[in-house]
Length: 118
Image 1 (spheres, rainbow, N blue to C red):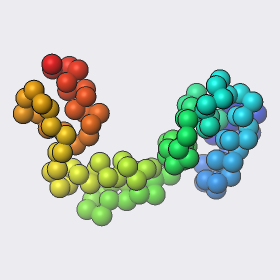
Image 2: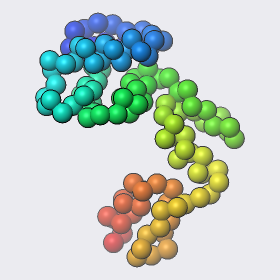
Image 3: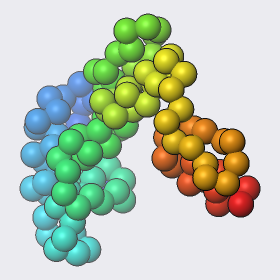
């Protein structure tokens, strides 16, 4: 991985804390808006507040997937992705369409369904 701002090269196995520190320091003057707290140094991704969301995003570049499913071989970069995955094993589709019998695992899938079908 190479920083798009200072061209520093990173090893994918480099410590996550070092990568996040670089991300915050190197990109500070390049922020398009003062409300963006985190700016990815590898791609044009911006985030407003949650450190954890930025860590999860950086993991898409490093390939680190520390969250492992206890029922299968699946692993992912964020705890929220693992929670969605685990619902597949339980068959729990808690998001229900008010206009038909459609149910989904995630609210984003339900919103997409409503936008396309209704």
